[in-house]
Each structure stands twice: as C-alpha cells, then as structure tokens.
Length: 460
Image: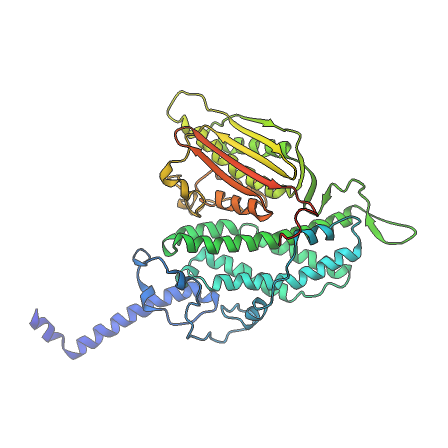
C-alpha cells in the first residue's frame, strides 16, 4: 500500500484534493439551487452538510437566530424577493395595532355606512403589511436547514409576495379604491387558503430538527397570527359584500345604509348561530368521510339543550366540531375492527350557561393509552400508522376556511387537536380531553358567546 501511495506522488494528491473540493462544491450548489429563491447566497455551514438523519434537534438558542449573522445578502433585482429586506425589517419593527373584539363588533354594528366601511378599509390597509412583515421575520428566524424544506419555502414565498403587494396598497380613500382593495384581499386570501397543509407537511418532514417545545412555540405563534389576520380580512370582505347586497338609498339623507332589519349577520359573525344545526351538518359530513374512507360510519345522537343559540363565528365552530367528530368517529370504527360487534354511536351533548356554550363529544372507542395522553396536543403527533404525508400526491385539509369541503383525509395529520385548541382559546374558550382507557373519550369544548360587554379585552 505504501508503494501505491508513493506512486501517487504530489500531482496525484493535488488531483484527489481538487476532485474532493469539486464534489463538495457540487453538493453545496445543489442545496443553494433550492434556497436561491429566498435570496440567500451565503456559504453553507459545514456542520449542516451532514445527512438529515445525522442532524440533531436544534437547541432553543438556535431556533430564533438568523441563518448566518455575519453574511450579507447579495444585491439582486428589485423584482426578485430577498431573504433580507430593509422594507421587511422596517415594517416588522412597527407596533401591531391592538384590535380588540369589542372594537371589531363596534365597527360592524348596524347601521353599516359607507364611512364605516372606508374607515375599516383604511385601518386594514395600514395593518396588513405590518402583520405580514412580522410573519416573514418569524420564518427568517427558523433554523437554516428548516428553511430549505420546499413546503416551508413555498409558504415563505407566499407570505413575502403578499407583504410586497400589501405594502404598495396603503390608502383607501373612496369606493373605487375600496373595490380594488377588496380584489386584492380576495386574491391574497385565495393564495393562502391551503398553506396549512404545506406547513403540516413541511414540519412533519422537519420534525427531527425541532424539539417539541420549539416546534409548538413557532406553530402556536404562526397560527394565532394567521387566525387574527384572516379574521380581520374575512370580516371586511363580508361587510363589503353585505353593504353592496343589502343597501338602499335613503331619500332624505342620500346615504347608503344597511337594509336588513334582522341584522342576523355582522360580517362573518352570526348573531343567532344554532349549535344543534351546526352539529348535524358537521356530523353528517364526517359520516360521509368515514363511508368513503372505511366503508362504514357510526351513528350519532344529539342531546341536551338542543335549542341553544349564541353569537359566534360559524367557520370557527365548524372547524372545531369537525376535528373532534373525526377523532370520535375514527375511534369508534377502530374499536370494532375485525369483530362482529356493532359500531357504538357518538353522543354529542349541548348545554348553555350564563354566557358560555358547552359541547361534549363522547365516544366508546377505547380511550387514549396513558403513555401517550400528554402528547395528543403536540403538532405532528398521530396514532395513525400511515399518515397522509406518506403519499406525496395526497392533499391534506386546510385550517377551517372550508373544512367540510376540504376534509378528504380522515386522520393521520397530527394538526387537528392542537389547532382546535388554539381556535377554542382564541376568544377565551377551552378544550379538554378526558380519557377512560379501555372504554372511550369525552372531549369538552367550551366557548363564550361573543358579546360587546363580555369580551372587551380580547385582542385580534
């Protein structure tokens, strides 16, 4: 072997070294190709050239830091998004305007006038770029290796694009501006409609690079920011539609006012939401999903105070009920799998106190094993053996914007319960899961009725 080394000589050593360096450069270039759209052109840290399996979970101190604090971004064309942007930094440094639920309800209180609509549009036009910039910065603080994930990268690009467009639309002074503004809101909302499936897939693939607490902290913050901005945006679009669909011109004043005398809906808020009707809609939808997925479905019973009506956002309740019922229906089906026993029914009980509505979803699906009970609210945790992410062509449901139509996957995502908990707590509600191992589960959903005098401090 020594003679072989001797024959290699100086030139041979140089050739081997050059070949090894070229191989490393090619490997790094392939990684840069995926990340160039983020605008970074920094040297790739040597410690990150390890295979994904060899990479250890990031420490908390590494979670919220820039990928390479000592590197400066290359100058690029103005039309190409840059990972580091002075405009993003400038808007992200601005304070987010605190919007209480009390203020939101006052804004949409009847009569809905043109001046109210324009004032709300002007506020939203100022607020959107600030909130998008803060969301962009949230992604920029992720570990570098996580931002390389194509699904997370796609979400980042969508948020960045919306920031750029929102930044250029800062004033709404008349109804012509308002019409253009509404078109932009609708377009941007459609662009972001299905980002939660990408977030879920991306974080499932990157789950080894986060400790559970770090992952939960990021996703909790992202989802709360998303709920808040979607709520403000959807509310304004709904008010705009209601203003144009139900306005008349008063002869004495010549001012447009809301013509609907019942005022059942104020934007996306339903002032007379019938809980039992919503339960039936969601349960029948989940039954249909079970029939398509498993070929059978359990029956359901609605009892308690079945005439309960309260003030809430239907799309939020729709999402929470659908997720809880999916878990209950799946557990009930699996409890009789490979047996001749009948599928036990799922029982939904509704009640109302002084200012809160409670919904209990009870199943006899065997309960949650004690060793995993504390993990049911962890993101990407699922008891389903084959998740939706194992199929790259599978599309997972979104975050409740159109959950009945999107619910083509019955289980296995690991995002349903943690997101349901965030939705429940957003307006001061709560979600608790009580398990009787070997028998079944009770999911208790408690929600406040949205009222001016009872929700003054909740910020959106």
